[in-house]
Length: 149
Image (cartoon, rainbow, N blue to C red; front, top):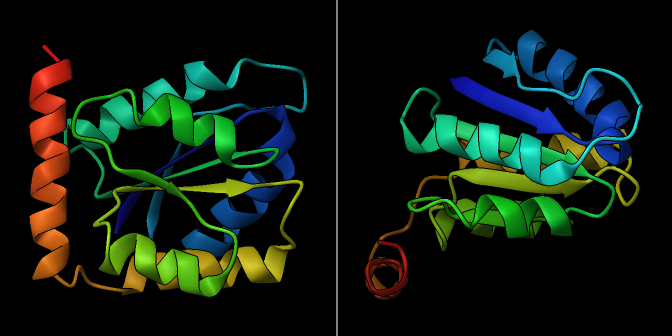
């Protein structure tokens, strides 16, 4: 799978770990930054990853900041993006199965490396469930049409 990856300084260490982990799993990973633990503004990175996923240059995106919240807020401002913050394996699974999320957001200061790996695997390996979930996503698409012009 082609994966867009990004973080701010609070998520840098976990992003670096996940980059190596995903590459060992055979995924193609493009790192959109940041590249050090120097302070950066998370919306800048979230926008780069969200735009790349929206334009279908990458199948999925993963964003990491300190808590996962800021990246989620920023990425969801891009039309067509469904970014979900996950904090355990089940929320990673449901991000795909229920929400058909195209970007997973994680909290680098909230999760250990092993748990983050399990969340990422659940996110990447769970197909969208369709059915009632598709109906709900259609309603979200209608909201986007109303507010994103």
